[in-house]
Amino acid sequence: MKNYRDDSIDESIIEKNLSRERVFDGIILHIDHLTNLLPNGKEAKREVAMHVGASAVLPVDADGNVYLVRQFRAPIDQVLLEVPAGKLDSLDEDRLLAAKRELKEETGFEADSWTHLTDTFTTPGFTNERISLYLARELRAGESRPDEDEFLNVVKMPFDEALQMVLRGEIRDAKTQICLCMANNLI
Image 1: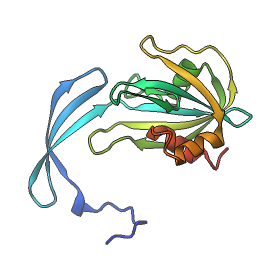
Image 2 (image 1 turned 90 degrees about the vertical axis):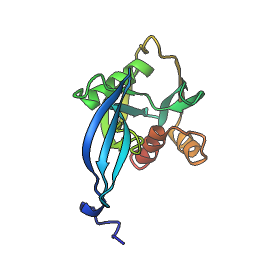
Image 3 (image 1 turned 90 degrees about the horizontal axis):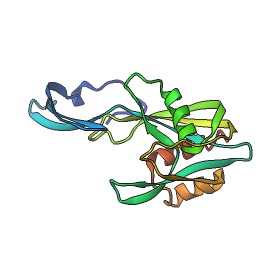
Image 4 (image 1 turned 180 degrees about the vertical axis):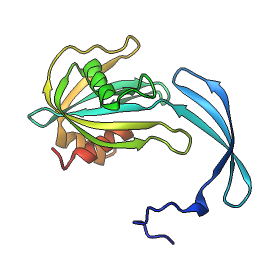
């Protein structure tokens, strides 16, 4: 058993990619089929959803209120409470600039203070999507400009209330949970 603090690469668990084939090109996702050589010498098929990546932002005002968005999510047929977020426009788009764009589009806010909280892999069992998470403070109000296919409501609430909603399982969006938990010691 390895010590949990040992982050050295353990070659005994690494798969080697033998081949990759693009089988689907979609609007948001591209699906690749991989054939990998396993550490035991056998081959395994892997299906990977390739994603350009995304950025998300937790806006917090001077009074300690957060601004989240309620929006319908078709894949789960539910309305969720989430931090403002969106996919990158390209693989090389600056992730902070994308977060600033999404904050403005979805809430109308701009911010003078930005803190990078972390980058996280959303579901590494089947996708390479990486989302960069930010905390935005020193907010300035403005007019929101959601995309034409984006319908949402902005919700203002105290930070502590939002964090308690996470702990009670009432906020179920992972990026929002992570933002609130990571920002807890910074607010």
